[in-house]
Length: 197
Length: 180
Image (cartoon, rainbow over all chains, first blue to last red; front, side, top):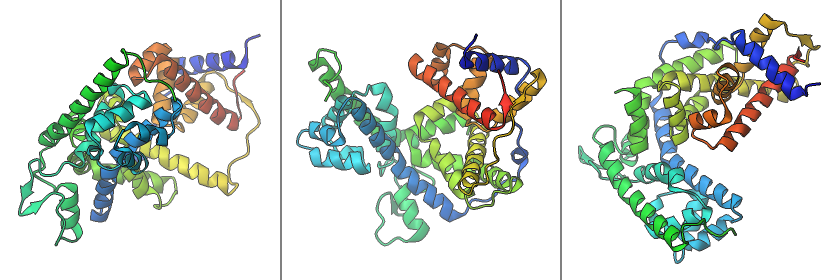
């Protein structure tokens, strides 16, 4: 007698053979709705925090799988333990850590460059100010004397002349340095994975 | 700017990229989510939050990769994800106040009925699970093929397919669909 998994699989194969249609939604025909400026500001402010937060979360989770606590990982960033601890718990600009310090965190967590390269670039990019940067007397990141939307725009990089390619290039330089430091750690370890905690 | 360029831009500079996505598809997405919540009588309370969460998902490289593999269109993908989130939140609210329907008496599903029942149940899964099940049971994709499409290992794909199937099974069980 087939077990219940087999019979369920057979049921699903038969159902899909008969044609399981994609769901249709009345809402796909909805009219556009203007987005409130406060909602835009809230989303962009959250977006600024999100990439470093996801990266920190992944490093901590990978470290945990390898048997390292966040405190153990921070300890690996020799002479930068306090900043490393802060990044792992609260995110922020990865460049507060030297490329070597950041590489040591990633190495200890057992993460390969393919797993963090893009996210690290994003996490740095949200903190890049000035790449393409002065428009109408507003300098990105400088908020003194500004209020409301102007302050949000200055914090978030304004709305027009921030050049994503230039920002990506600045972020990419830090990422490449981290990769180089990570490769150096790997070479020193003879190509093998870091020791488990 | 094409959707592909918007996805690339988020990878380069999330601030500008997300702002451009909001400008390009935000009003359509918000309108769709609002309508979905109203059609299903969920109220407006969670629409803004789901809208925000949907856009922030674009900051995850693996989500952008998934959108590219699904054809590269951002609005349909985020709409499906947002509908699912609104439906899921409503189900959880109903369960909390004890309004979840009791499991029905098991009903054997005849072949056309099976397809309909599965379609209704699949619509309650998140878009990722929906894709995985379609690849597995319609295209008969192996774990290795599913892993390749999701950019995950074969082992992770096996687990993802198993989890998706079990979530579908629970929905069918709760609906009283008998499949033995």
